[in-house]
Every structure is written in C-alpha cells, then in structure tokens.
Image (cartoon, rainbow, N blue to C red):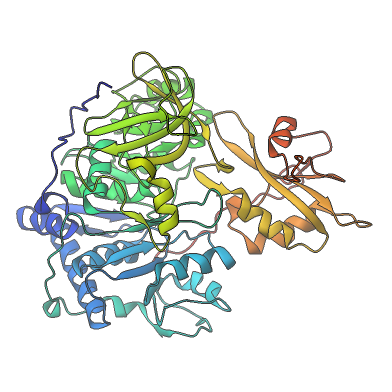
Length: 542
C-alpha cells in the first residue's frame, strides 16, 4: 500500500538528543534561555531556562524520596504548573509519570492507583479528599500540589506542595534513552477497567511530529486537552520538539475558546475532537470571527461542519486517526474535503484491515485496523501489569486497534465503529461495563444494559435500560442521584429506560444491538429534560 509522506515528518528513527524530554529541554534552555516556553491559565510564564530549573528542582526532590530510573510516579491533578513540573521532573529522574483522569473516583480511581504500583502520588488538594477509604496500593507518600484546608485521612505520609521544590544543585544526572518511558497513559476502558499504556520517548515524539508536525518555533499551541489524555501530552511534546511555545489551560471551553486564542496569541491548538467542532460551529457568528491568530490545527472527523468552521474563522486543518497505543498511523493532507476520511497510511507505517481471523479484507469492506511500524518503539510497549491483554492486542505480529474501518480505492481510510461496546461522549471513551457495575449496585435494579445512542456530529450520549427487581419500581431520578457521587460526570447516563425484561440471546446474554436499534423510546426518561445537567468539576490551579 502506498504511503503518504507528510511534508513535516522525517520517518528516520530519532536519536536521544532529538526525542528525549530532558535532552530537548537542555538544548532549548542553552540556545534560548529567556524565550518563553509555557504560560499558564493564571498568567504565570516560564522561559526555557526557568522550565529546566523547575524540572531539576522537582527531579532532585523525587530522587531525595527514593525515585530511581524506571520507577513510576502517579499524578492526579488538572493541567497546571504542578503537573508540568511533575512530568518533566520525573523524566529528569529517569522515571515515568502516570497522570490519572481527574474525574475518576471510587473503584475506577482505586484501580488506576493500584495499576501504577507507584510509591508516590502527586495530587491536587481538592482531589485528595476522594482518597479517603480507598486502597492506595503501593503508595506510601502523597504530595499535595497546593495549600489545603483539610487533610485527607489516608494510610500514607502527606507532604505539602513545597516538597516538589528540591535543591537543583543536588540533582544526580541520569542517562535517559529513546526507548525509555516518559509517561504512562490510561485508556478510557472499553470492555472493563482502564488499561495503562506504557509509551516510549520515540512514540510520543513521533505522535507529536505527525499530529502537530506543522508547528514551528514561531508557533504557540493552546493545549486545552487534559494531560492525562494523549492529546494533551502530544500538544506539549510538539512544542518541545519544534521549539515553539505552549499556552496551557485546564479544559476546553466553547464560549472562551476564541477569546483564549486571541489573548494567548495561539497559532494552533491541541485539537478539536468530535463534538467540540459542533459546539464551536453552533456558536453565533460574529463580525470579527476571522480576526484571530489561529493558522492551523488538527481536528476530527472531517465533516461539513469542519469545512465550514475553517472557512468561517480562516484557519487550515489536518485530520487523521490516532489512539493512545500508536503514533498517528493515518493522516490527511492539509484541508482535506473528503467527508469522514481519516487520511492515508503515513510513511513508516504498515496498516491492514482484517477479518476476525486476521485475513486482509478488500477495499470497500469493513475490517479491523491492524498496525505495525518500520522503526522500533513507535508503538506502545505494552499494557502495564496486563501481559494477556498485550499479547492479545499484538497477535500475529500486528497491533490490533479494536476499531473498524474501510478503505477506498485511492487509499483513504474511513472510521466505522469500535468492535467493543465503548460509548463515545464528548471526547471520552466510556466502558459500558463500568456503568453497568455501578448501576447494578442500586438495590432495586435486577439487570442493566448500558450503551450509546447516536447524536449528530458522530458523538453519543449514555443510555441505560434497566429491569427492576420483581415487585419494585425504579425512580430514574433517584437512580441518577445515587450514581453521581460514584462515577465520573461524563459516565452518568443521560437516558434511563425501565423495562420488565431485557432482550436476550438463546445463551441468555443481553442483546444490546436490539436496544441500540430502538434508541431513545417514548418511555425513556431524559436527565437533561428533567433539569439535571452535570458539569466537570472546576478545580483551582496550584
């Protein structure tokens, strides 16, 4: 299959100085010590030299607490100064950072913490209270990222945020290699608890240079995707690789997006994913829409809204396909107008669409996307602590994405669906099983099926169909009130349908395909119509 060579990407294997985070920062700080590298939501800015100094201070503090090359440090905080220095400090110490989704709580949070097997957790003080009553696994030391009015009651040593500021002069240099691990990123979980993806410097650098390779040293990227997401990490990595700058904010905000672009003079951003494009497109047009510095960005999917948005605001775009485990194997050219296209195979990658027995399917037929690369370390190293899942994903020498696509005769790929029962809601892949476990904990529920119902723009909303225990009724509002403190906000179902029985197969398995076909029925209860709108919890920045 013919490969597409993005003009901004060199498929040759990067060396240590090119892709290893500490080496990059050292080079930038030596060449341009006073040039601004990053600015934060509260207005604070760091030059390259200041970034390096803070990274060394943090690395020294971690080393003083026993962190060694190859270790993992967990972090649970929003995009902030503390999370950036935690990442860079870990890498200078030869360790990997495992950032955790700030919406996690309860069993999902406990699973993530235990999966890292980390000794140290760096945590936002408002989130720290959620740790009470949980098993912290191997964690013996919790470092807060800011001042706290109430200390959590946990079985670990608690330290204030000053603990992240060590003596840079006490830092012991560590040799870090391209195949070492900078970050461990948790997937959203498709058939069960989230898997921890072990990356390499080569993979993260390659992902950044493919996805945002158009970025130059004169660009500033608005990073509005969270750093526990591959998009947030890749956005910052792109600025590191190109010598450009970053404007880091906690999250995407439709109404403030263009104000932030103008205020920060950002020329690119960490991406519009799915419904984010729809949100921006639906904002009322203004006379000064084209008066903005945004010149190019990465977005998906390509749709009528994508094209209209780029013309309205006057920016170029590219699109493609990526996931946490890979390094952008599919990419489009600039301003691709083929609707729903994920682009072509980029240079340095082989892709096949296969059937259930790993046999390649012809053009026009749907198959699972499988990938391998010409250079080592461009794909993830494995799922942390889960050799069975790793082996299953890598069977027959190809990484199996679990995603269904088809290819046209010109070599363009088109995303169709996920093989598993994931629900895609506003950029989050949600495990239906996770939802079902929590709903099943409600006393009056006998059985439940969770699934996604389609919305315009390629997004979904979460729906559950429940069968009550005999002789009882279930109040959907009471069920949702029960779920809110137990689940991340994006997982809480919007739609609740109550049925006497759920459709079953002859082997007594629930037929979700039938429920999806029926969609939102007349007897379905709508949480938002009932006035129960949920928002991501806004955290103060430390």
